[in-house]
Length: 216
Image 1: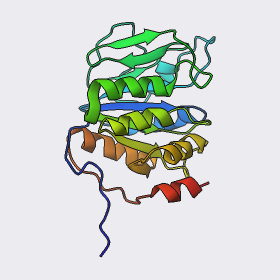
Image 2: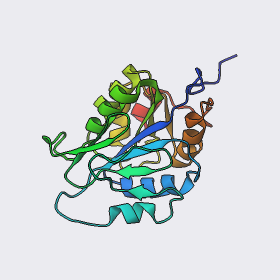
Image 3: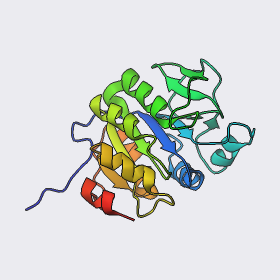
Image 4: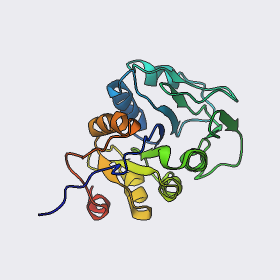
């Protein structure tokens, strides 16, 4: 009998979530945030590729239906559970364990903020406590970051390419890293609270890397 795959067999509390998205990511993030519980015992940091020149109200757009506050942090703000921190325009967002830092370093993947920058910093600061998540988008930003998360003992997840409006980023992440699972947004919203509490999660449909890379 084949064994049903599960995520987080060691039952580690994965209470740091880093999310990356690009094209098609606003809708995915709104849907995910809306479905998360208000008592989520995890700190969440998000990079969404965005215009470097338009001020916008993206934090309010993403937080409109979210039970958790969505905040564009200031330099040195505390990184606390129960909050979602959105990288401001034209600034890289990193974490060092207790604080959030904003820098205007070189662009990565032609963008600032970049997903890899956040993911690598989280892997260094929190190791196996991290869940890295790559959602809809074009290009391969996030792939190197997920490799860092996995190498540090964390978990790597991608949005199911069959659902993603732009599946290239999830597919490229799978092509470069050994992701733990490809989940729909609803499955992701169910998984993250369980992982934060140290529970195992069994996806309704487990997609192996080969299946994900072929998905269109």
